[in-house]
Structure formats: C-alpha cells, structure tokens
Length: 450
Image (tube, rainbow, N blue to C red; front, side, top):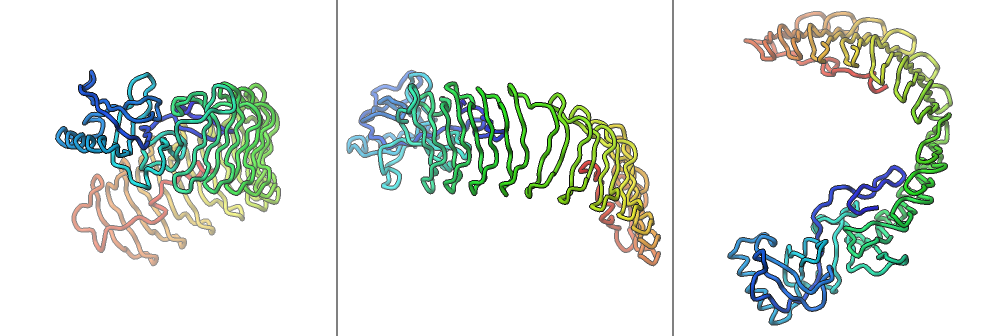
C-alpha cells in the first residue's frame, strides 16, 4: 500500500491521496558553508554526522526559508557565528529528495532544550499518517527508520505528538517512509491506545489474510478475509453493542448473490433483500424492532422501481408512493393512523415535486403549493387554519413573490397584506409584510427520505 495513495481497509480509508508538504525536523551541527553558491544560486552547508536523508549536506536560499534578501543575509551571519561555536541548530527540511540531490532547508533556528532533546530526525504526520507541516501534525515518526523483520523492509512506529501513544505499527519497503509502501501487515491504534485496525498484507502491500476493525472501546466492528487485495469468503459487520449487523460473502472480489439479512443493534432483523448480479432485486423489507414490517419496496437493478409502502407499527399504511430509479413519480400519499389522507404530493417524471396538499386530522385542507418542472414555485400558495378559514395566500412567479401576499387572523379578519413585484414589496404594506407560515417556508421533498 503506497503512503501517497488511498488504502481501503474493510471499506474504511487509512491514508489520503493528497500529500501535504512534508517536514523533517532534526538537530544538526552545521560545520561549514561552501565558498560559492550552487548552480541554482543556493548556499550549500556541510554538517557533522548525517541528515535524515542520509547525506552530509543541506541547501538553503532566501526563497526556501521565506525571507527577503536582507534578512536572509543577516541569518547567514548569525549562522556563521553558531558554526564557529558548533552550536546545534534545529533544521527543518522540506523532504528527502527522491534523487541524490541535497535536501532543501525550510527553517533553521537555534536549539532549545525542549526541541533538541536528541539528535533524532522527526517526520510530522497527519491523522491519516501522511506528512504535513509540524505545527498541524498530531503524529510523528522518528527517522532514520530501523531495519524491519522482513528482508528489504524498514520498521515504522508512528506515535502521537502529545502523549507519545503508538498510532501505527508496521513496515515499509523503502527507507523513505513518504515514498514507500506498507507491506507485510500493520496495526493502527486509537488515541486511547486500543487497536483500531489490524491489516494483513502480502509482500506487495496488498491486503491478504484476515483484516479487522474495532470501535474505540475495543468492540469488533468489521472482520473479513482478503486475498491479494480482494475480499474473499465471509465478512461480518457488528454494531457497537457487539451484535451482528450483517454477514456478506465474496468470491474473487465479488459479493455473492442470494438472500441478505441485516440486524439492528439489539440483534433483531432490520432489513431483508435479495442480491442478483451484486445488486438488490425483488422485494426489500425493513422491520420494526418487534419484527413487524415497517416498509416494503420493489427493487430492480439495485434501485427502487415500483411501489414503496411504509407502515405504522400496528400495520396500518403510513405512506405509499411509486418510484422509478429511486425517484418519486406520479401521486404520493401519506396517511394518518386512522387511514385519513395527511398529504397528497404530485411528482414529475424526473422526481421534482410539482404540488402538495396537506390536510388536518379532521380532513380540512391546510396547505396547498405548486412548482413547475424547474422546481420554481408558481401560482398562489395557500394555507388555512384547522377551522377552514384562510391563514395566508402568497402569489409566486418563478419562485419569487409576485402579486398579493395576504394573511388573516383565525377569526377571518385581515391581518396584513402587501403587493410584490419580482420579489420586491411595492408601496405601503398594511400592518406588516406577512411572513410565511412554517409550512410555507419549506419546499417539502418528504418522500425522498422514505
């Protein structure tokens, strides 16, 4: 698994594809500066010992340390004094070059006891274990890496900056962590020290063998077998309660067809459906905790195609709609527990809501709105009190108020009115421009959530 690419572990990402700027920080003693700049105009310095990149030289210029020429010259004067005194410096290089060139200095400063406790180089890492700037890094890796157990590998032990807790243990196939691949298996840990993931790998860094993922309290979340980077055999997913959520079976990286059952956090059936060609097909059922059906949907090619019905716990119909490729179409109905209509919603061919009528439990129309095919509100949107008297009437053209907006008290007397043109109030507006009722403030797409 490359450090610079995404790695999926039982469906969970470990590392990210985008690499931020690496920073390697090390205590170094600078002993000499070359008499002439290099071919690019930079200053080359010799150090005692070796850098984390393996050489005995570092390169620096005004641009690399983000200084103008005058401050940079002053920095070199101070550095010359410390070179004569052989004062240790805290040096930050951008990264180890992939070729044989000299690493470029990003920062250089006099050591402090806290920052220069030892001469080990440190590579600072993101929560996802890729290199980033030191000031934003929660994790750190000491360099150079020691030899690993497997031939041609180097041992990796990433720890947290704050508590020095182990966060990742494994091995890479290059001495340079950032350009290497994790091979032979690795383990990641939560900040509390408990294991987060255990990943078995083959020699090429592909997931191979049993992989596991855990909740922060140590409860198993996922476990499954892999063969050279592909899921194979049974995979189990668990709730935080420890109860089985779902079992799935794979062959040659493909999920096997057949009936599927999922369970809730108490171990009760949650959903049931059938896979054909790796996609849901036929009837899909969801269940209440007592085992009664809470919804049934007609599935085709992995999407809802046909009638979807939702139920109340007593079995009464709560809602019914028709879908085509997961999008609602035609009339959708929602019911009160006693069977009376709660709402009627009309959808277009592409799933857009065209109209809605909502009713009180007594069967009184309390809301009416309309939209065009571009989902823009059109015409007069009305709401009524449950006694049947008008509450608001707002005229819309292309999603903006255009015409009269009026509101009434519950006794039927006028509360306020205002005339609008293209969304702007015209002239005096009575007591106050009427604010839309809560029902009118929402462009309801309730059936999309079913």
